[in-house]
Length: 562
Ligand SMILES: [Ca+2]
Image (cartoon, rainbow, N blue to C red):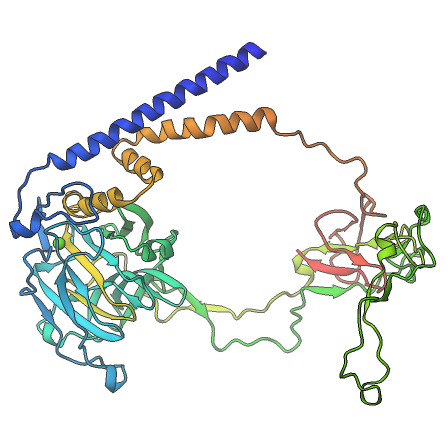
């Protein structure tokens, strides 16, 4: 046995040594890889070669170029907003003094972890409405190609109340980006939003009712991810929406899937209304009984039922401890207390020293009158007597009768929504300096992924390299070499697992543990002629996952609909 333990220890030691040797290696490689990158700058070379003070290595940056067909891209690296139009109108449903879209937009580098040469679009103003938009190269038509929308957001000052979502503005002859406001029709709204403690990642599309032409917003289900952490870490995050002609959709955050579903089944309200609806002419009969439980008229108080037995009684086996001071009071007047000089006996009454714990009691088991401790009363009985009956014994909750829905329609292709021809940001924020970058709209996920690798990937690399601490270095190393996670888990998890396996104390049942009093394992079966057909059976259950009734108040047996 001892020999086996020695071999185990030797194995663990070997794994640890190999692990740390591997961890050292990728750090060196990572730095070298960055330093050896091509010095190929499309932006101002003087600015581009100037390494940020935060960055411990020299970063080279090249404005990304799409590697396939795209409908739209924006990198802002040319310091220009020439292809963007700032709105010159007013928000329609806002107070007049803040209705104007006068929030400022700038093209700037990141405040922290900047990549030299890389610029983005920054929402600059607090508590103002912002609106800016740009036309696509060509309208996107929802037909037989997927839609991929992707962009970066960094809440550089955190997020108080505000959004960073985009709107894909529906294509129409009336579309005028100078007049872009909250009423401008859009096909899709996508991206982060937050107010109060409600952190959201929107995916909303507008669906036109084929019967009457009404347009209704459809909201995708919420992603199952901690958005608060993402929105408040002041890092640049990548938001991707994928829509497919088969009506499936998927949202990615930093290239990890966070929500997926179908436009037909996973949005609220549903695209297609129900085939049947409640009959508005139907009403509940006056004598309808909706009670789920009714008192059992046959319930009889058990003969041995003692309503007067208290729950607790003095322990008859308790013995007064030796040395108990019966004649000593628990509290005495404080001998150190003195009557205040300004005490007026006529006004304040006779002065008495404050009471303090009796010092004689601290050395004894106790003082004063000894009373045995209270224990559970053996005569205090627990009785449960729920009776299960079939639901048809009661009428149950009333609901109106169903009729064919006059507004019913079936649209099996909600993907085929209104085509769009512009990207717009129409935002309000209580925090400034929200950074946007690297918008791309395409039909090929691979194109968006390569675009992200050339842009967001570099931002992520710089931010990770600037993070101090061994753990972040380990994570950075493992991002490029996922097999390192196996080594980490073996190194940390194996010793812990073995220690738990061999050293954790075995849990044994406590033989002195109290069990509930007077609960029997009886089962009985009988019929209830008054309420149910004669062939229905009821089960009287005396033990199980039902309700307890405590003595002290008589409860009749109760029928419970199952
Ligand atoms: Ca950029």
